[in-house]
Image (cartoon, rainbow, N blue to C red; front, side, top):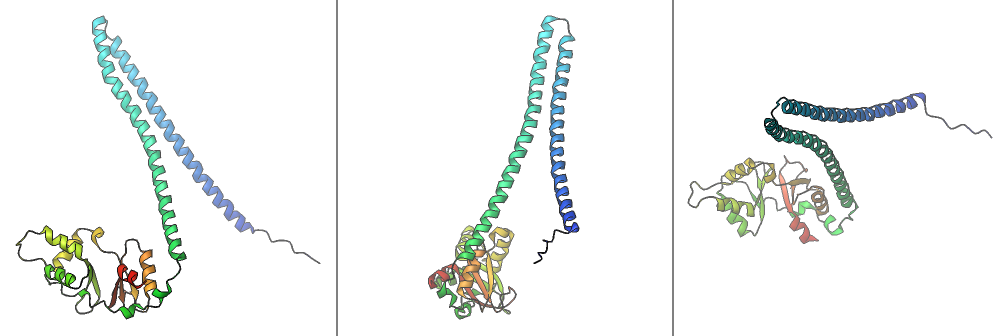
Length: 275
């Protein structure tokens, strides 16, 4: 019985691995040399500064023969050079210690962020599906246009009244013609905006005025939403929310695209009610 020898790695593979290892070793070596050069420069600057300060001090002190004047000059030299020397030493020490601390903090932050995202993804993936939510189609919740605003010229006071009358804490804004998603409005933010306005101010702000003002405040003031197709389920909506940090609202369109007509609008509170 003949046993075939185990095939060894090809010369090209060995050469590629050797090249990669050599390159990595070269990078590490260059980093070490660069760090050593910086240390030598810093040490040289420090020594040169000390020598220069001592020479200037000695020249100033011994250039006069009068004992009283020499004492006065010595005091002035010490008052001038000691702070300078201290500044040099402090600057060099601060540079190296703060630099190392900053690099360590940045590295730790990156590691923690990576670990957090990995753990969060694992938890979302490992979570067992809710059978009850999986049996509820988003299309069956066709409330997207019931709790919505499509008139951007509508006074903001009327928008707030509509939210109160329907006992809603938020509502979506859709295009009047295409019924595409435009934005999302929270009642608490609308109330705060109206309270900041002086009473009796004319004209009264409209929904468009409010959306324009919020856009000027930056990205942090914009709501975080996700989009799903009408064929998805409440379980899909819950999973999508958990995957998106800060998301509490799902906009359901015909095909899951932002540019498609809105079919339904689902909040985190509504998902909890169906559990």
